[in-house]
Amino acid sequence: MKFKQPSNSAPQTLTATTSQDARLLVRETLRISANLASAPPTLVAAESSGLRPHEANFGLVEEQFVDSSLRLICCEEIDGRRWKYFAENGGSSTQFKKGSIRAVSLQTPHSPVDDLMSFIRSYVVPEGFPDSVTPSYVPYMKWRALKHFFGGAMGVFTTQSLLSSLGVSRNRAAPGAVAINWILKDGSGRIGKMLFARQGKKFDYDLKQLRFAGDLLMELGAGVELATASVPHLFLPLACAANVAKNVAAVTSTSTRTPIYKAFAKGENIGDVTAKGECVSNVADLLGTGLSILIAKRNPSLVTTFALLSCGYVLSSYQEIKSVVLHTLNRARFTVAVESFLKTGQVPTLQEGNMMENIFSVPWSKHRPIVLGPRLKDAFQDPNSYLAIEPIFEKERYIVTYNPSKGNVYALLKDQAKSDDILKAAFHAHVLLHIIRSSNKNQSSSQKLLENNYSTLMPTTSNLQAHIAESYKMVLGLYGPFKNKATEQGWVMSESLLNPGRARLHELVN
Image (cartoon, rainbow, N blue to C red; front, top):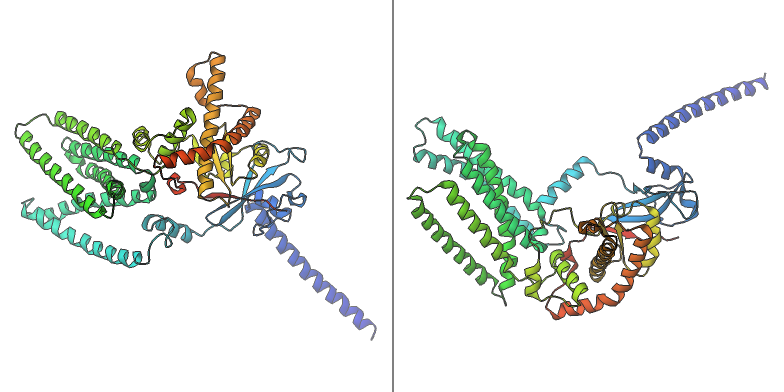
């Protein structure tokens, strides 16, 4: 019996252990199945090969194949968030399938609360906050917000009292209803002003384009206000739309006023220049108001009078903006300077460059031939193209390429890129675009095609690599002289005015 008791307890222990292991195995299997079902394909592949998302090993090594078909080719960072780019093996160790580039995020997604807070911060604080402002900015804005809170509350009652004193109606409910409609109209305008303020730094480097666009919006708002007389039953929606347009224009005018006056001041007299400029504007506004009162007494055609005055307003606005001479090279003026240098060997003067600047291209337009600081997935669809031209830029802190499917030249920036590297990348992009356009123009002329056919810019892969190599040699000899001549003409170059994207490529190390 002494020998049987241990033999009986052993199977019981083994059975309990086996049952517990079975339950753990089933539970782990269900967990893995759920993760595989919900995870992105590239992330599943990366994890199945031992590539954990939190790992920071960026090596292009044989051990980092994913399912023996995906291979790490590049890493990217945007505002501290990182991605790995994989490409699908095409059958050899050096070739990959076209269109097989996949991005894998190396961090967990933000929570909805974090996304909401980031969205709010993009509207209420400057870019780079708090490092981009002084410590006194926060208390100033707190008290300013509180002041406007009380001012907005008082505005409801003062508007109601004004409308009541004008005899809007003897009914007690009417003044309140009209006041509420009026406040809604003004409130919609303030909301439009707040939303447009998100343009942020665009007011610094594309102020001419934004200023002219704001003046056009001002005229659009005035036209909508004029239309309320024809459809009075639509007063509230039309007035709200007009107020949104006019408040957006007001934000643009206010945000671009100081940089423009700063361009006129030659010393520490920016305040004096601003005050006198606003005085001239107010005097002209009063004279215009007086003239319109005299004209209105003769009961002219409202539409004809408004059309003539609008034409004068837009023409004056255009000439006003064109007369501003800025010393900085934003994207539009940088394009003018580089194209002139490539064609004539000379950089235009400050007056010539500003007069040649295109102010009709709005800054938020996505149809731009050159993209500075893009993501790798936007610049490349074929991983072989990236691996083919990457050695050309081994000594540079950027990579320039052309995407035939999108018709754009892309200048990708590496994580070590400094101010001069970004300027050089932008210059290189313009050189490559100039070479491609010249090549396609010559080719279309030799084949007797229509002139507008060359604008599609569709070089072959071999020609594209040759163009990139040629542009690299040209930049080595031209970038230095371009900078010197631009400085001689008085131009001030800064990468921040070119508004590069925030994506940066990381080196792959073994």
